[in-house]
Image (cartoon, rainbow, N blue to C red):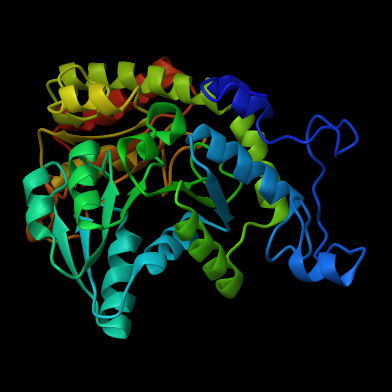
Length: 393
C-alpha cells in the first residue's frame, strides 16, 4: 500500500500491476481492441478489473487513471484523447439547456470557443466572463440558472490566481459545481479537490507527458454521480485515450517531479533576471517574490512551473522583433515539454481585447525548457538587444 501523501512513490509505482503483468516494471502496451470473456454474465455485467472493449476501458488507460487519481487525492479519474476532449466532456456533463455558465476571462481560448460556437447556439445557454482574481465579481455573476463555474488558476498568459476556497465555499452553498484546469501546477503543486473543486482537468500533453510526443487529457473527481455521468459521455462520444498514448503519459509521469522541479528552478531564475532588466516593463510569473497575489499563492500552491510572460519597454512591433530574434526559444504553441518555446498570444487580437484581458498585444509568453539557465538567459538577452539597436519589425 502506497502512502497517499508520498507523491514520488505514486509517480513511480501508483496503479502499477506488476503481478498481473508478469513482473514487468513498465506495463506492456495493450494494443487490443477487445478482450474475451469466460461467460455471458462476465460480458454483460463486467467484473472488477475486467476489460471488454478498449473504447470503454483498457489496461494501460486504467493504470494511468489510478495513478493520476492518487496524485490528486481523488477517487475517480478518466483519461481522454486530448485536453480539449476532457474539458468539453466535463462542461457537457454539467451543461443544461437554457443554463448559464460563469467562466474566467483568461481560461484556455478553446473553452471560450466551445461556449460561444456550441453551447450558446445549440443549447441556448448563456455565459458570463469574469476576472478570476476578484472573488466578489465571480459570486455576483452567479444566476439562478448557473450550472457550472469554470476556473483556471493560475490563468493563461497573465497567471492571475483565483481564491479557490472562497469561490467553492459559496458555490457549494448554492449547489453549483466547479471545474478547474490544473495543468499549470500539476497535482504536485496544487490539489484543487482538497480546496473544494468538483472536477479537475489536466492536459496531459504538457508536463505529464513532458516530451512533446503525446496528446492526452484527464478528469479527476471525488463525486461518484459526476464520475458515472462522465463515463457515460465518454462511452457515447468515444474520446478515451488510446493505449499507446496512455503508456507514453505513464512514462512521462515517472519523471515528472524531477522535470517539474527543474522547470521551476530555471524559470524562477529567468523571471528574476528579466525583472531586473531595464528593457522589460513587467514580468508575469507566480514564482516571483514580487507576485501581486503572493499571499494567495502561498496558501494554495506549493510551486510554479516553467511558463511565464513578460512585456518590454517598447512597441508591439518591437516585441515581435524580440520574439523573432530568439534562437533557443522556438516559436510554437503549447508548452510543458522539455524544449523552450515562445509565442505572442495577444498579437493578433484587438487593443480593446488585450486591455480587457489585462495585458498588451505585445505580451511575450515563454516556456522555460530544460536547456539550462545560461543558454536561455543568453538567448533572451541577445533578442532584447534589438531594442538597444533601435530596430523594429
